[in-house]
Length: 272
Ligand code: NAD
Image (cartoon, rainbow, N blue to C red; front, top):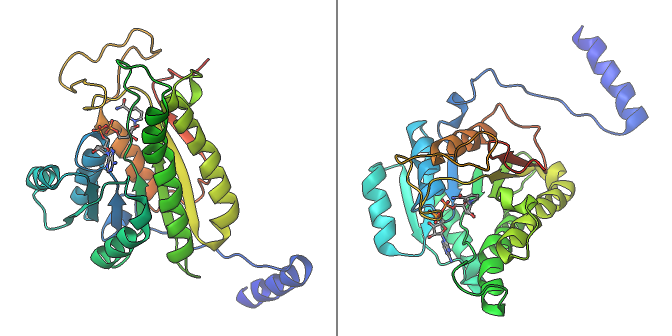
């Protein structure tokens, strides 16, 4: 039987010029998270912090980045695990992004999953569309994601390794408004498709998730208060925990064939 497969592969190779073998793991998804090294940008609050907590509960090591030493310490106190590492990094510091990522890699020794989570919302109380708003939003919501992903492609992909990059978009990407936040998030879909096309064969698995309204600091909503949301088909907001659970699934060994996609987790709100 083995000999037959061997010759069949040789015939395939001659005919099509390549052989791909698959190793389907016997581990359950969550077991496969144990020992993984995860990096989360902007992980001191909201979705990022919840994701960090869940990964650590499953035995992964997580490095969160943040802009403030105090917030990083607070996050460390909340999670209270030696598997949580922190790194001070304002993502606006572009010129140094190469160095920051190098130091992060030294701290974690490898990176299995990189989560581009940090994001800022357009300040709707002020007049938006101004150049500063545009630059601030695009710098964090799109430019930092692009350059982090590019660095990973150029520095981490070796012949036998797989690196997953998960970018946090938003359902706003499918809500067309003259608003830099929505437009910056739309760019993520195009970006993940581009990176997938170019780097999947080298071991990159890159996707985005697009949450609906989630109870975090960004939305000023609390998980504990009323989650009712009239214009959502499911009539409610999301909590960070359910977004985190999906990120754990994408990061696990149960999910190796999702590539270049944006998955909406929004109770159906973006359906038009
Ligand atoms: P949050 O405000 O709690 O988290 C955003 C994080 O990004 C914060 O920790 C913040 O410090 C960090 N950040 C912002 N600018 C930074 C910078 N210059 N350098 C480093 N870190 C920076 O809100 P959240 O809801 O947890 O947001 C996480 C992601 O989810 C964002 O990308 C956001 O756009 C996206 N999202 C949120 C919602 C929602 O309703 N909350 C919905 C869809 C998408």
